Image (cartoon, rainbow, N blue to C red; front, side, top):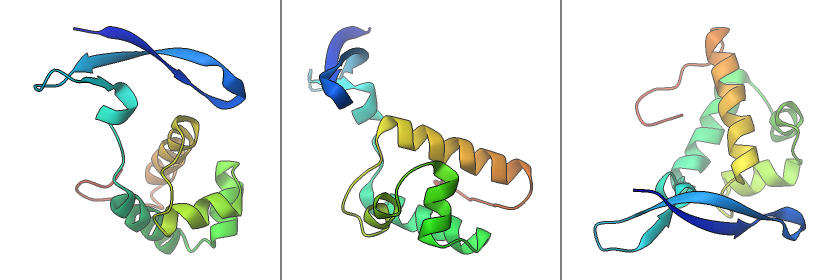
Length: 108
């Protein structure tokens, strides 16, 4: 079952998000259900950069985000926004299709 809830995003805009109840009865937003563990993200970003021989600046440029954001991901300080996560997913998919990136197991 899906429940409507809303989250504030940049600019103060509210956007409805489908949420579901956990076994304990708490509402879990889609973003929280599919949350990225900071440790795994840090390792994933480092592995992507290693395989593609990219600096943090190069990866940031390819994703259309700031160098500081990539640095914070790698240091486990923040998780990506929904938009940034989508950009990272698309970038990984593109590089994988081109045969430049090979992610295994729980990565990507």
